[in-house]
Length: 287
Ligand code: SPD
Image (tube, rainbow, N blue to C red; front, top):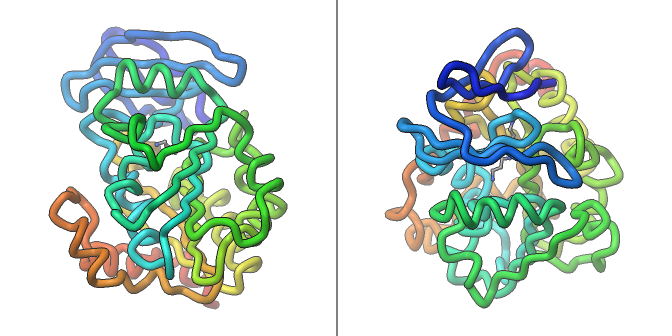
């Protein structure tokens, strides 16, 4: 797994398997919360950014790749989108994109580390945007794994997991018990999505995650895109639904309502991203 980010002659790097992924800039805040080391940096290229335990999470001018990819295939396809659960997502970007959909009436966001929320509000305000004061938004500082385990059957239309890499507080966001609860709490026609790591830098985790979700739901599809500052830059999000792969086809009215405000996502981009399955994954998943 990745090692610490070091202020290194004006560079802040994530170190992963002998490769550095870095931004030129300076450290604004470095502190250790009850859960992890939190670093907020300032960079010329991408604005202010956030690292947890030395791993890049987000940056002001490079967050849309990640948040639009996780949110819109799910929110544009679930049968209903009244009730949404976001597990993790403490910077607010996932909630912000969800709340652009007028059909969302109630969004619970369960983030384990309240300091991530506070520091994001203070230093990366554009990422959460208006989500923090939106009356539909309900922040719960607590354990998202326990929240999913305790939620009633069929209580959410969409469940999105926006955690960090499978180490430290996010480790339990990649296992069978957790994914089973995510499936159980979906309503009929509900859609589940999680960030599923890099097919290059975290190949085995990626493979295991997609296969496990596929086994539990009977189907699942990784969508491939880019988050340039993450290890390898090549990233994935995996989707499944209570009643088959409805996430492949965005509902035209929902897509039209959000498309002009997107930088990366569009129905065309989504089609290509679901189809851009690397050959090794195709062999693993489809024989
Ligand atoms: N290797 C980084 C994985 C991080 C996924 N979560 C990012 C948080 C953005 N809201």
